[in-house]
Length: 175
Image 1: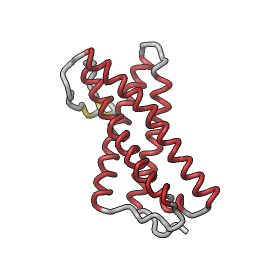
Image 2: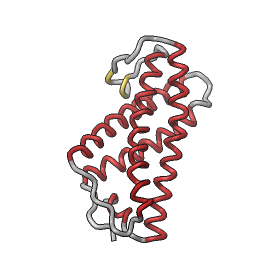
Image 3: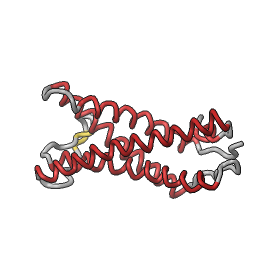
Image 4: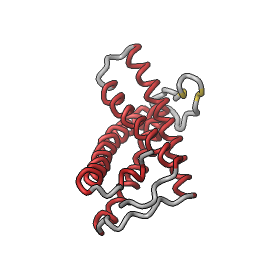
């Protein structure tokens, strides 16, 4: 069986981030096809607000990881899985930083300030630069697809462990 689980805070940060990221990816993929106007502008504003929230949650997760190490993997986890698991978790965390930071930079370079849910204006990180904005849009776009791929890998591993091997890995992160 899986042994020790994660702390309540780790679980809360994980699941809150997971829900917000899935919502962000769906919203982001949907809104890019919208015609310019109020619906698209409102969607972008929500996307930015949620993205900044994910950035804050990811920083909190990194602080938690620095302070309280993740529980050891159980003996049932094979050598190749022991090598792949830290890589995939690192990629998730890197992409959870790259996505909101590239979006914030893209907004700044495009001359569109980020205001967290219409309440807290955030500083522009770079000066207006249309070429930089275009490059950052590309980074943001392809990072989204990379994030989707790593999430699919992550969920696939969870399904393999929980449904096929029944080794309790999922229960370590569930409430």
